[in-house]
Image (cartoon, rainbow, N blue to C red; front, side):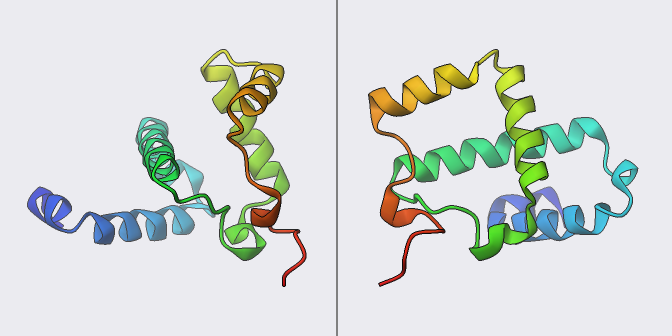
Length: 111
């Protein structure tokens, strides 16, 4: 895929990256650490931009294959890299109301 294709069809590029990441789970060294960090940073920024414009849904049902350990590792490393304590996250959520609403929780009763 050329760089022109990446700009013309970003959704296709993202789908290709997601597929490549899934394939790399069995061989993590096949993806350079710097490339993975750049992809994660871009994905996080895109998620935040979409969340600020109304998309507030967790991962697909069942977590999209993400385990609790996966989530804890990423969350811990992300907060550490930004020098943010868990208490500060809790305070930010309380002050802004920016958290998953009870009806959006994946464990909420379905009506």
